[in-house]
Length: 132
Image 1 (tube, rainbow, N blue to C red):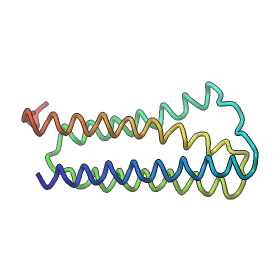
Image 2 (image 1 turned 90 degrees about the horizontal axis):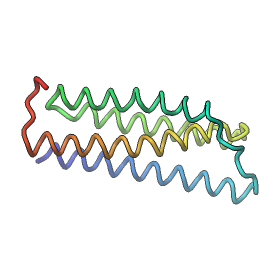
Image 3 (image 1 turned 180 degrees about the vertical axis):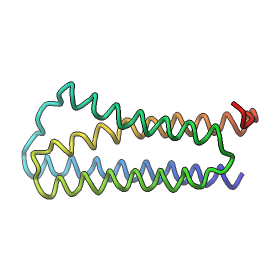
Image 4 (image 1 turned 90 degrees about the vertical axis):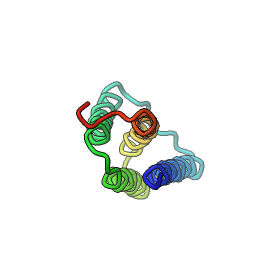
């Protein structure tokens, strides 16, 4: 039960950080009056590759381990790292391309966290063994 609460807290932290970053992004657009450039297909592919690696790491870790603490720390580290990258890019006014990468990764990362959280709950409720 304690691990479930810790996982839920990790998800809430991820949601808070993603909402905070999106607000910074929108605030920057409103202040500058500058709409970021269109997102190209290569940008989306780049972000999909990064997020797929991230999601696979989480899925393998949850299926192979009963201890979720390391994954929670990794989640918080990853989301904080992306947020700091995004904020630095926005402050330095780097053509908003890095900001676009970050917002796509945030959206995908948030959906990954929901998938991983659902899998973790399924494992806890139905007792999937470690050999899976």
